[in-house]
Length: 98
Length: 389
Image 1 (cartoon, helix red, strand yellow):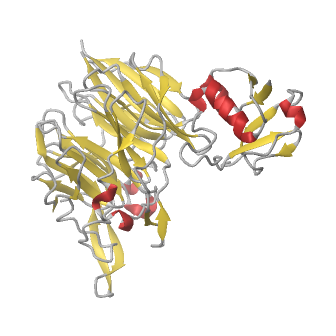
Image 2 (cartoon, rainbow over the protein chains, first blue to last red; image 1 turned 180 degrees about the vertical axis):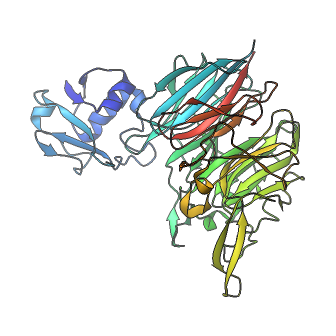
Image 3 (cartoon, each protein chain N blue to C red; image 1 turned 60 degrees about the vertical axis):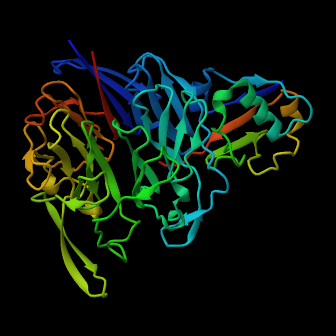
């Protein structure tokens, strides 16, 4: 079970109050986690990555275990502590715009 | 007694303002979608409690929301806007080719007859349509395929398709406007489009009478006179009596600006240009009565002399009268954006507009006097009005 913490706007949109949990079959990667999240919460489609290009939105960042994973390959495995549910996977809206 | 519902999109959410036909006591509902930019909201003429809203942020992109109960509850619908085929390029500000990229929905125009059919005007400029209540959106690609698309260039706000007008007398005719490509019309339901810019003159263009490149800010039509269009261009208010085939300047005595610009021969000249502004609308019952809000030049974007004034022409242009009773007399430096004026269809016609200062002003007597409905909303991006039985 993967634990995911969403930024406030997306928690409101998904109508969840705290972290969400999703199941990922097979290798736990950025791609598989985001796909599982979008499958469980279709309202998030397009909010994290462009629906046409699949690219991460410029002001969306991914963190886990105090590491910025935003620029990792979408197919690279996430840390074992994320895959095991010990650490949450953080989706963060960049602090920008004043 | 009739009810009036004013749909207000702002930089930080949506607000619904409702009143009975007297229009003197208002209920305020909102913010809906707090913290999100609501570029536009509009109700279906065929089913007035069906509302559509364009919700976006720079962080999380675009959503489209739909309500089936007049805005009490909302549900997100489809938000995938994929250009048809290979998108290609338009011109960037510096004239270099720039790939077409979806950024946001500026305007939602529900069909006059089918609540599930809606047109969306987007940035980078294109028109999309849904026929399933917003679940899926498909580009009417003939517009960008007109041939001039690679020459379109963004205005200061982006390359946005911001105006969509459906002809109530001809289901296959649609008018659209793009900053800063100009205005176009289809007569075959969106398959093919042609520029409707003959008569426009823009001194800031290398060719002031070019077919494309004019910064058209907004267009308005009276439903009983669909061949008559009024345009608020960057500078100048224009009028067409032949469905856009030709235009003439009806700025008349509107306030103006002196602009210094090279002419075609490269000589620096001073031009006296009238009527810079963004909004324009037509009285619900008088097709020759038109409203605009003049703004001081494109470099200042606030009312002349700090006095907020609506100007009304009752002669279809040329002659304009300032209307300021109840509006700020001094020290007012707000703007009124292109989609932020609307009228109701009561007798007397109500006129409404919102400002970047967060005020929504209403006149229940066709502009003779004004009062704020609300004063302290976030910057207002759009105002639409529904007159409900």
